[in-house]
Amino acid sequence: MPAQSIIIPTLDFVQSYISRFDQESVGITNKAITRLIRAFPNNHDLEDALLKVVTINSLYATNIYAVVDVAERIWEL
Image: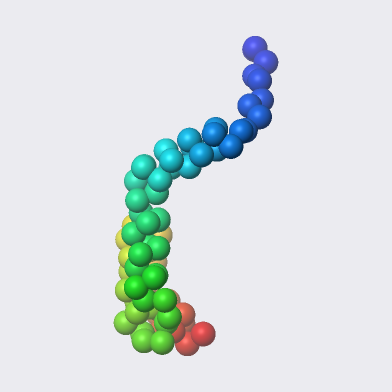
């Protein structure tokens, strides 16, 4: 088995990977969630918390079945 060389990351190398990440679906998903959280930064209303829980559950397929219960718990904090 040939030895693998370790890449020493440079600023350009890291920025290229950040750019690739942002252009992929995960990056666009994170941007959408960030926009939602900026639009509804607090959880003073149950509906705001529920909107974020449902969105994250859907986009990341977390399989939370009791989304209302989770949103209520966040709202109570």
